[in-house]
Amino acid sequence: MKIEKTVYLIRHGQSEDNVREVFQSPESPLTKKGEKQAKNIAKRISKLSFDILISSPFKRAKQTAEIIAKKTNKKLELSELFTERIKPTYINGKPYTDKKAFAIYKKWEKSLHTPGFRVQDGENFDDIIKRADKALAFLQKRPEKSLVVVTHGYFLRTIIIRVLLKTHLSNEIFKNIHKKISIENTGITILQYYVPKEKQKPMWRLWVCNDHAHLAE
Image 1 (cartoon, rainbow, N blue to C red):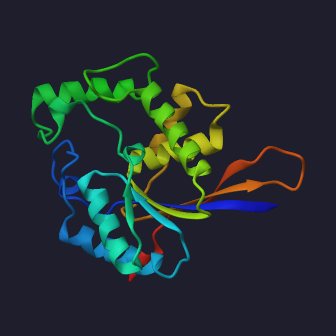
Image 2 (cartoon, one colour; image 1 turned 90 degrees about the vertical axis):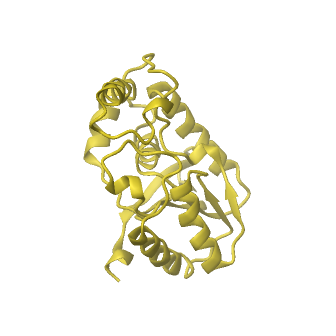
C-alpha cells in the first residue's frame, strides 16, 4: 500500500454561537474556551510535518486557523469549499425562540436530507453532497502530500460519509449517520489517499475520526 496524501481535518474551536441559543452566524467568533482549544490543537499540530494550512473563511474557523498558522509558521489559505452547511440567510443569528426563524430552520433541516427540496437560499442535500465531492477532489489534486484543513462539524461529517459510502449513499442513510457521528470542537479527523497493493483504483480511507485527546491538557 502506498499512501499518496494525508489530510488532517480539524473542526474549529468553540464559538460564541455554539453556546448561545441562536442559529449560528458565519461571523460568530471564538469564545475564550474556543481560543484555548485552538491553542491546544495548534500545539499538537506544530509537532506534525505538513505542507499547507487551509481553512473555511467563516470567522470561527479562520480564527482557529490563524492560531495554528502563528504557532506553525505556515501561510494560511482560505477556501469556500470548507465552509459549514449554508443556512438560509434570514435565520443567521436569530434566537431559537423566533418562531418564524425556527419554522424556516426546520424546513431547511429537512432539505438537507431530501433531494430536490430547497428552502430560500440555504444549501440542500444535493448541494452539500456536491460540495463534499468537490472538496475531496480539490484535496486529491493538490500537489502537497500533507495538508491541514480547518472546517466545521456538519461538513466534516459529510466528508466522512462520502469517503465511507460514496457509491451506497441514500438520503435516509445520510440523515441517520449524521445523527450518529459526533465531532468535538478542534477534534482531528485524518484521511489518507492511497493506492492498494492489489490492482485497485486509488481511494480515500478514513484513518482517524474525532481524536480530541489534546483537550485533556
